[in-house]
Image 1 (tube, helix red, strand yellow):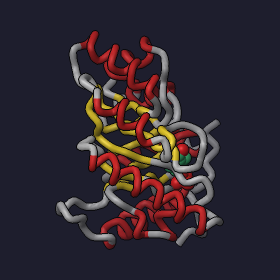
Image 2: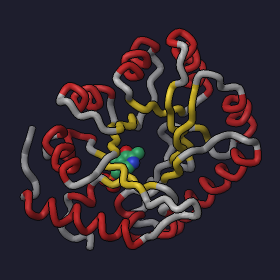
Image 3: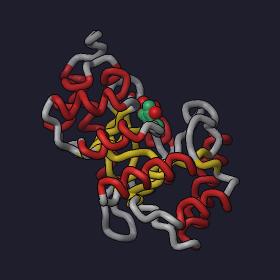
Length: 235
Ligand SMILES: *Cc1c(COP(=O)(O)O)cnc(C)c1O
């Protein structure tokens, strides 16, 4: 399982290059630097999720994202205390409770998710940290970008949920510039509508590795970088 597809020297070089690119992108209107969320799913892209994450932490990366709850637990079991965002929603209340107890940030992608998370939050009597997921055309999870009323109705009533971020995912950023731009515009549009309705949006992020390299203007507040740490030809 732990097939090393890249040697450590190349990996460290890539991490440096990504950090340089991030530093070059400057600060946002509030004086915050662009945040790197390192995606370590799929067993850390084959490197071994714990090993890969530990190398990234040594290089100063502070925020991580995973695709499954098992991956999140593996990191916590290995003693990793950094911020972890789970990129998939979960509709099982027991799971939600366990994830919250492990301080994992959840993805809120639907009205049903909101109801489940609210129920658990009420039980624990605490505000549960989430990132909202907007579906701008990828079609897996998320509030559909065009169904604004449903989105707003759901998000206006939250009592036990704290929105720490809002994100979407590009389906084809590696080769379809036109569709990527359409998705970006849909996302920005949704953010405007949420703000108009006084819904907290938190940290905004949409770019994966390819978009980060090709479309820096789409960086917003954070970028989710996975494969760029491992590619030889990206830069
Ligand atoms: C895998 C994944 C990423 C990272 O994608 P790369 O192309 O490897 O950088 C970012 N966001 C989500 C939601 C993902 O599933």
